[in-house]
Image (cartoon, rainbow, N blue to C red):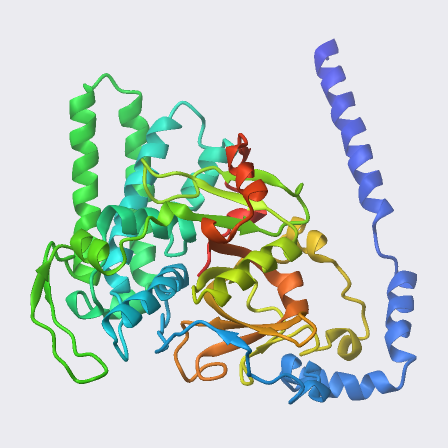
Amino acid sequence: MKKTTLLAISIIAICSLNINAQDLSGKLSDKDISNIRASFEDIPTNVALLNAVSNNDIKKLAESHESDGAINHFFSNKVKVSGITNQKSSGRCWLYTGLNTIRPLVQEKYNLNNFEFSQTYNFFWDQFEKANLFLEIARSTANKPLNDREVEWLFKNPIGDGGQWTTFADNIMKYGLVPAEAMPDTYQSEKTAMMSKLLRRKLREDGLKMRTLATSRMSEEAKQMAKMDMLKEIYRILVLSLGEPPTEFVWQHENKDGKISEAVTYTPKQFYNELIGIDLQEYVMFMNDPAKEYNKLYEIQYDRNLVEGGNWKYINLPNDKIKEFAKQSILENEAMYFSCDVGKQLNSERGVLDLNNYNYNYLMGVDFSMDKKQRIVTFESGSTHGMALVGVNILPDGTIDKWLLENSWGADKGHKGYLTMTDRWFDEYMFRVIIHSKYIDKDILKILDQKPILLPPWDPMFKSEE
């Protein structure tokens, strides 16, 4: 036998021994299993707990009834809002939230009881632009192998219906707005799962084609035409699912006094400029992420929906400073985009977000004790849902005990469509608040002049609100 073959066999044998040794070091013996069994069986009350937990809703069993009625829904200060929206079975909360923060401006300006922008219109362009962005990233990363982490992430996440403030602001500034009646919801906009599945399938296929085109000898003009053909198919899927977005429309309204306006024809951008006319770039995104250094500017790669748009940038701040700016915004009657880990300690029947709503430690007899930083770095917690922050309760001594959120799950959810959040819950599960720059200290605004720290798209904070 050749010496090289003997050497190879020896290396394999040594590696096998090391693997086996590692496996044996963590192996559970019969004695280990017996000890673990005894740790449960030796406690008589565990039988009752077994019967209860195995046959009932764990969340109901863990509910802390002493907190019932402890938190009311009265607030010292509220933004003037009217009407509750419903995103239904879709991940468009970021869009509803963004629109709900500017909707009160229209209601006040035109003295309206109710008003709603079309979410479907801007959702259409969000999906179309995200498709274009995906194809461009696929082309720009064509020199990397498919198992490269960046490329792998791209094909795992070609498109989604979630988003955040940057995707909202860039979309509105480019495409404008239309009233709900100009492009109403469809079955697919309210239940986006199947449409999203088809879009992902088509984009993954087109992404592979873009990688081939990028390294081919075709002219740039021919490559661009090939991409346009791909986007025409994406456009077709979106039109069939959501309807075709209007280029102009007629708007007429009735105010609280019963006076009917004249019918006026608008383009979507004219409609935005006349009804809102705010530069959405003047808003600043704040994050509370104790896993990263405070008072720094961060940017997340690819967290946008326009090729020409900016990645999401945020200032990481302690909660006390964010609350200070948020309180001032509410006192000035201006709602804010707010996002959080809404599923944690939410009592949806009472419409309350509070740390004392459920006690899983007592029920299970185990200690769930991670702090916010630990939850973030282990992906146990992150921003999952966006809502409009519209109220704060300031006690006589100046302290704050709770905040009010306008949700987009319909008026029959929570407390008449709203959620009351305790100040302690804010500290643990709030992640993003977008506040107009006029309410922010100048020294904090200077942080925007820093060169942002670029984070990869797989960072825990990338997660989009749904």
